[in-house]
Image (tube, rainbow, N blue to C red; front, side, top):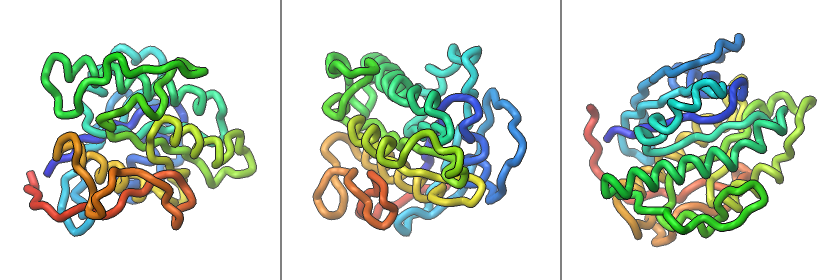
Length: 234
C-alpha cells in the first residue's frame, strides 16, 4: 500500500534533515533550501509492509503558490517547527488551517474520503481551527524539531503538546541529528493514514478513535496498533 506524506513548515526548521534521516538514515549538516524533493522508503508498520512516498517541500514564502498542490497530493502531513524559533512555532496553526481548507475544497470537488470541513472552523486566537474542527481527522502530526539544541530552546515541550492537543493532532519533539523520535513521528502518521483510507468511523484494534497521550514518549500522540490488513508493494 502506498502512503503519500507531505512535510510542511517554515524554511530552516529541518524538514529535509528529518526526511533524509528517516529515508536514508543520515544527517544533513548544511542548510540548502529545498523547492521540492520526493523520497521513497519501504517500511513495515505494525507488521504490515508499506511503501512511503515522502514529499519534502519548500518553506520559503516565494513558494506558497505551490503549497496548495502539495497539500492536495498528500494523504498525511508532517508539520514541522523548530524548538529554537518561536516564529516557526507560531506559523504551525496557520499551516494546519491551510491543510484543512485545501482538503475541504478537494473533497467538495472529488468526493474525497476525508470528508468536508466547511463550516467547521471556530474562533481561535490565531484564526485556526480548534479540536472540534476536524470531525473526519485529516492525518496530521506536529513535530518540534532540533530538540538536541536544548540550550537554544524558545518553545517548551508543554507548549507544543498543548497546541497539538488543541488542534487534535499528534505531537512529537524530534532531533534529526540524533534520530530521536523521527521514526515514531512517521509511524504515527502512517497509522492515521491507514484509518483515513478505511473511511469515516474506522477505529483501532481497541475500538477507540486514534489519538491520545503516549506515555512512553511523553508527548501527545501515539496510536494503538491497528487490525492487520494486506498491503500491496508498488
